Image 1 (cartoon, one colour):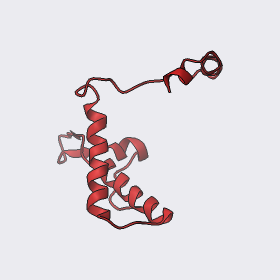
Image 2 (image 1 turned 30 degrees about the vertical axis):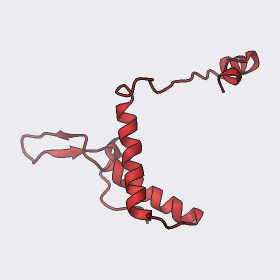
Image 3 (image 1 turned 90 degrees about the vertical axis):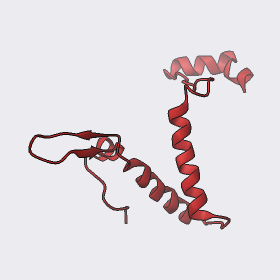
Image 4 (image 1 turned 120 degrees about the horizontal axis):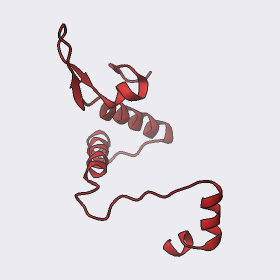
Length: 104
């Protein structure tokens, strides 16, 4: 793969289209955030599926539900003097609102 990525034609294509590759760091603790998200998806898939096999549509549905679950986890809290702290989730930044149910 590295030979292909370092080939002159490939490099010219990247330059022409302003493509820059960003790699996950080699040290395990540097990419810990990404690895934790991958682990969360894998655990949810294992618990949901077990040993069953799904169609493409069913797989898409399950992954969408897992995505909703992961994007609804609290990252931090927004504090207000008049109200209880509101948990901020990735869904707030993606959809600009809190997701309380899965898509229908």
